[in-house]
Image (cartoon, rainbow, N blue to C red; front, side, top):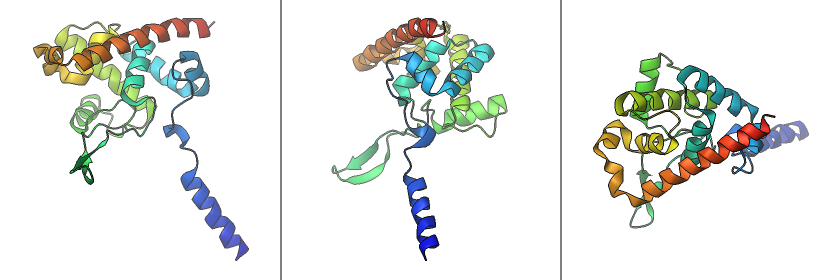
Length: 193
């Protein structure tokens, strides 16, 4: 009986166990802290930078804004009458907060059928793929975190229409992404020494 109790206790503890890789690193304002806690994040972003040309600091700032580095992040639930759950605000999920349809397009386009949105390697590769499309379709340089974020949020057609111009909150957030990108860039240059 004692052995069964120990096994059950271990199973319960494993199920509750601190979030694993889906929990956010501490001190998200410091790029050096993030990459020292999660070196696999830096490796994934460096691979994406080599493959797609999107700088690490642009990826980091976008992931910060989208998911705060939480691998299983989801949009909030919607409620009817303030109490009846009506589903999520969108299908966005994972580090990159990719929508179902866009994720499926990425997997089909790249042949990466097994890609998962809660895998940092796949999430950063998705961002590189998407931001390259933003460059091709809308002429946005890969280092332009502000406009890349606007296209990321609004979609390529929405960006081309300028849909973000009527969203003062989004313009503010895109400015914050650009600022964080530059902060991360400076920090990464320092911590790599």
